[in-house]
Image (cartoon, rainbow, N blue to C red; front, side, top):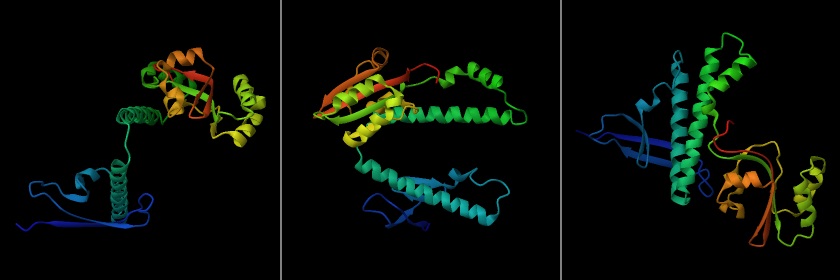
Length: 249
C-alpha cells in the first residue's frame, strides 16, 4: 500500500533570533494508526477528532474552513513554542505542577460559576442568592496558597536614603505613598507598591532572601515588616494584608 504523506506549511513567529522565519513540516501517518492526522510537530499530532465541537452548528462552509485553519495554525505555533521552551528553559517541575493545579482549579471554578449563571439567566440573580451560593460552595473557593497585598522595594545595600525608605515602609502611611514611590523610582533596583493587587506570597518572594522562609503562615502572622540583605542588595517587604491557605478567597 502506498504510504500517505501530508505536508503542513506555516510561517511561525518564534522567540528571539527566530522571529519571522517560516518553518515547513513534513510527516507521514503511521501505518498502524487509523486516525487522520491534520498536523504534526515533532512527535505530537493533531487529529480530526480533536476538532470535534470546534465549529458551531449553522456555520457557513467558508467560515468553518477559516475557523479550522486558524485553530490549526495556532496549535502549530503553540507546539513550536512549547518545544522551544522545553529545549532551552530548565523548568522547576514541582512549581510548574503546582501552578498547573492552581490554573486547573481556577478554570473549574470559572466553569462552575458560568454554569450557575447560565441556569439563572432567565431571572435576576440577587445579592442574597450569590451569598447563598457562596456559602454552600465555600470549598470551591478555598485558597491553595497564601496570598498577600504588599509593598516590596529592593535597593543597593549602601543606599543613603535607605533609612527614610525603611520608615515609610514601616508606617505604611498611604498619604506618604507618593514620597515612597518617588524615592523608589530614584533609588530602587526594582519595586512593587501596588496595594490593591492580591498575589501569591510564593510569587512575590521568589528569587529573594525571603524565599527560604520555613513557615510562611507563621511568618505572615508574626510580621508586618521584614528586611533582609543579599548580594549587596537590601530587600524591604511590607505586608499590608494577607489570607492564608485553606481560607475562603
